[in-house]
Length: 503
Image (cartoon, rainbow, N blue to C red; front, side, top):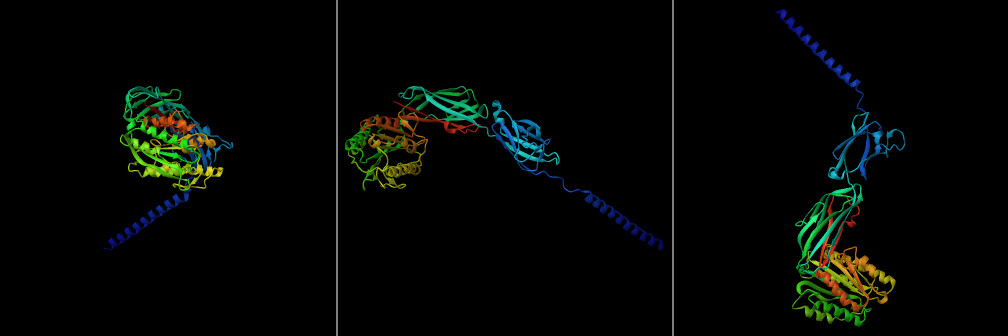
């Protein structure tokens, strides 16, 4: 019995000693690890920006620590992997054998026009030599630039109904960062009145149903050419439009010339070959330069649809218009025309609106935005300049009020005579007609937004006949570079207009 108690006591002592030994060993190991740890490794803090300049990949050091010349840098461009040392690409401006803030790595490359769609982005990885960690990781977007342009012509711009004509569209690459472009989309939808027969192109394919011409690769030295053969058919003259004539009734126009204006407009409406009588035109007529105090505008004819049964009544009313013989509050007439068309029962933003200003001079009254009456009237230079400014604002008021669409609507001008220097054609062209930029017509071959000029009111009727023929009979269509792989910094030549006037 005593021996058993002695043995149990010895076992307990040995167990305690063993546990104590293990605890000491563990604590010693932890102490060794902690005491021998030198702390976290050195980190490299640096800001690198990647970008494309022309056909050069640029990596610019924008702050942080310097980088050794033998640090590796890798990137992938157009599915090709490249590997360099920093020193192989560095412009070492201060010659200290490091890549420092403000210095750039430059890698020149050439685009392969046959594989342009592979140039989406560049994935870049740089590794610091000492810390062995990535200091730059990420994509650099490529935005190559090319100067593209489009033109459109027709072999017969004044065909008769039933004639077959050929439209020619050409797309050019004039230069840029690469020797061409890829995935070029040109949009050209045939207008009503032109019936598609067939088409042919040397590059890409054209779908007449969508109006989209897609060119996979457009080389710099080879223009893409699309020819479309069409037949001119009846139908375009039936498009409904709202026409607002804004007439100058100021005192600078003699009574005999006022008669020529009224009779010229009335005679044009009487002739169905000039002015449609089939309910396709709503006519509004505004006169400016009238009461009160000869410096306001008034509605001479509220919006009226011209039909076979009422066109003679309309022309007779026009022949009886009384002249205001006041100053020239041009902006008042424009503002009133915009509001009158807007309030028509048939106004719709999807309906074509044509506003046409007729004047023998320049504005001589200031008009508040959206108002119908002028003030500070007179022929002094300050009055004229203020009048011009308010007229420009009135055009913008009409654009905003009617939500005019440059692909559908227009604001044109007809200047007549040379009294007191006559109308300012350059100002009308540069600041009034719309869409911009305007042009001087005839010929009326560049679409909407034109100003035309005749020297005397005796020429008014003939020019008005030509103008109405263009407004009602012209088949206007637009060509545009819709999309492309490259960015085009010169977009002014990315659009073209074709005007065919059917006889």
